Image (cartoon, rainbow, N blue to C red; front, top):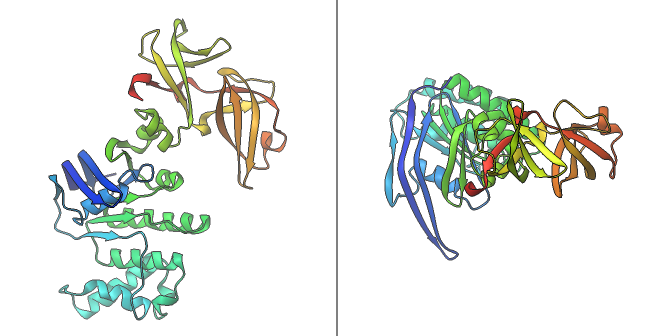
Length: 355
């Protein structure tokens, strides 16, 4: 459960100039709360790193303000942490320069921080010899040793393999819960966002386009661009039909393809139909409770853990995910005809004008 507001953004406007031109970041309202992780998502160049730098006070706003409501430190861990000279333990000790702490307290905090991120066995190793994943754990150890009230992370999983990302995600989630720190984290990895976030903020072209709880943003994006950023990649246009389907509406994509959903949009409204890949179901020839029509398999990508299936449906490509080596994933082939279905509660509509 989130706690009190730690950092508040109001009417923020940051203007940057470079050889490539000018860039404007705007955010009307954003709060960071204790015991909560806010994940910032967006396409490359959308301003994610600029936003966390502004939160850290490293970018001067042209207008608006970032207000801290806490007495503890606001600490940032950068995308490419670099080791300093000396041992791993010494690299954490350096965080206390200028801090009025006893030697015993400093040593206790160093031990605690290294244990928290499982590199205590490397305490006396030279920091310059650490792997990329170990360096990231060192940077987080140094940050948490300060016991910050606010922690800002810029791409903390960049460059790590899948196992390294998964392990660090779990340790970071525990650290947030244990310490009550308010976290804002930039990542391009949707899986990490889904695992770590309590809330999600989406930046599009330098503008804070949507912010809300994780499930609300993932399942109810407000524009097609946001939908694609948060993984709702199955998007097709249709029209809300005149004839109801029980207590549901039928969205007509074409004469052969209709999708049932719950909506308050009036008949005749042109909409984007959004279905997350994990909510699109398929089988061969049997159909399901809420069929949406047939399609043809055009692409199968198997990474050994999951199978991503691309399907030609109503002239568009839809995608779903299967578990590798199980059920339909063992028999499906390119060219297979499949019957698709989706629960009405998992079909999301976006008015075309919004996109």
